[in-house]
Length: 508
Image 1 (cartoon, helix red, strand yellow):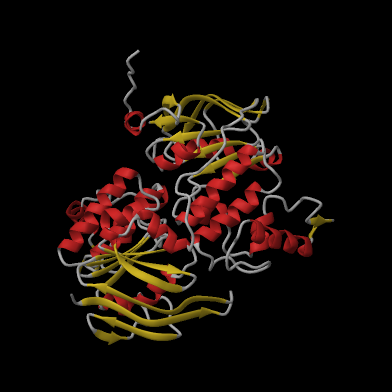
Image 2 (cartoon, helix red, strand yellow):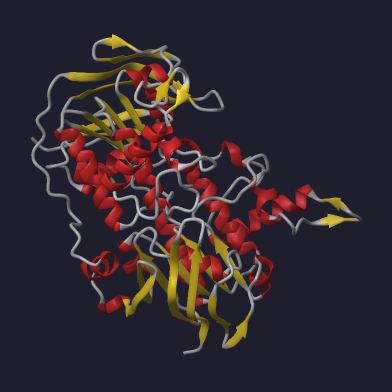
């Protein structure tokens, strides 16, 4: 079978972070196949694909497209060669509409005048063609992350790429959206398109890919046929050791109620109630999981609890004290930690260095502040300790973090939020977009916080994660509690019914 893409002996070194991202890497991708590229965060997968797409020049090596050596020095070169890329971190204009983002640079016009109606109709037709419906007139800044990812995919498909690189395309999608996307990917391959599918979700590899290539530490570890490779074998190739895909934890020992949500109502950005008269409690020493399809009020609820969004009615209490009108800072001073769902926009500031990101929530502490001046040496020591404790690869005290992989960025957030033994940890989609090794690390960190006496509120659209980590589970549907279940006894079918708005009816 003809190779659509061949990368030969690609090497890429980043002097600013002293990282050898790609070390003599070779990869062959066949015409019309779905080729999964897997590996831990920081393994070099995205760097390799950025080189293919013209975002980074290789230090050495060759790129061949359809059997011919090519020079790809800019994304324009890649697009001319029929290569498209959907990035893990969105590259959309927030103030533009969906149609304006998808058609950017390709706008229909007549006599130099933009044809808005034609633009919207073209986007509707594109969305219908690939089974990914959107509202062309909606603005990006008002969309949930799952819909933004859909726009990125449509933007690449609009340019009719014959070779499509998808970098973690399902990281922010619901299970239903994932199923739809995988069907689209298979359909594209069957029509002759070549798909390079970067993912950390090995179940997806089994579902959609023909072959997989595994990278580790900047090197290519090998290529396998997916049909003859098991998920544990894939995980072992990625990490270099056996991986515990199912968490082994001790039973919870819940204590007193530390947080209570009492008849709370919260509105979304449009002023429409997203959470309706919600009441629940979280105890010390337990993980309470909140399950549900994305968009059922989880984001608004977490923002209300953390202090980022006001509530319209009801009361929030922490350790028996009302905190309804307290600021984010006041809540953090009480011992409330927040791992946000979007580590780039909310969790971190990529324009500052590692040390400042780690102490941003405690820069007024005497340990880091003297007479209003930051103590840089203390910040550096804290950063060095965090790097060691949380295994933050490619990071150094005082160093920039913009070049860190997604998994290592998440570890920076964890290091900051779990430092100081918080009493209540809000973990919103804590493993979104992470590889199996990083997921294992995050899960262990959350259970360790629980076992040390903290209360953990886990919000996740990953049903396996909810079932594995939680001691109790409540299911949200349209901003209300559809039911509370025991993860030890509930079936996936039963919890799926609750997620869809049905009620459980059990025989006595």
